[in-house]
Image (cartoon, rainbow, N blue to C red; front, side, top):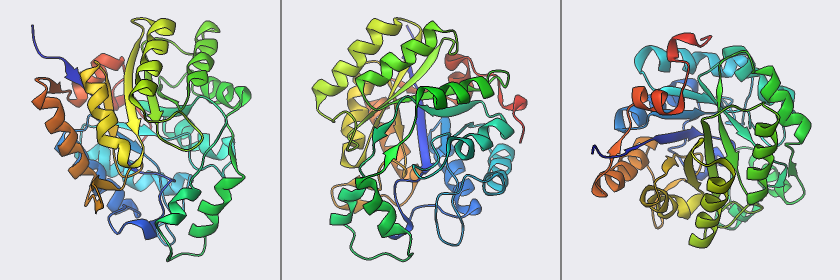
Length: 309
């Protein structure tokens, strides 16, 4: 029997970390493209992408911010491109949805519930910032809710219904799995589901092994063989959570959106460095890393020739 294939997703740059936190965080379109291609060459089958304002580094969900790096990545790599609908917690759902609705990627992320999204603990580690927006953005998460109502989720699903886009369904807590089950029952999400369980963000489920096992047990009970499971461990939890998922039959997500670190007190120098590390974990357990073509087959994706970029 051939070894199991494990899908690596790399989240290249997100809205969580700010430019002052790491000199290695890709900000410009050129940097994001280079980081995504490097991650793919290191073993990532999927790259999960946000965009940034190239001057300030602020999250930017405009079409003009996404278009340059989407085209370059597609030209230079066969990697599966996954565009965020999460955007930033300060954006409207209409702003967050526009790139996916326009570019029609193979995969898009979709958050399964409104939640407290506590970024302010980062202020304990980082005391100085290059840009005026960074500290208030982190501090503001004390009272800001990341809004993903049933109406918001339905709007994203119905807007993309005819695009052939499948979703990386981000579940930050047990209730989010039940929200997914609700939309499955209504026929708005079709199997196979790609469930990304997120651990260790303040406001969501924790990072204890019992938390990981409970999420997996619940998903198994609700969705049986109709889903593929992946995990995201935030910050210092990245590799330990990834190792658990690999051992439990799941897939993994790494990248500088989720963690700036490669080890205790040591900043990762690139997304590719994190991909290479988790690839080694996979191979040391006697498994194999899925290629983009294999990921497309496993997740029943439409193919890179059917996107609008």
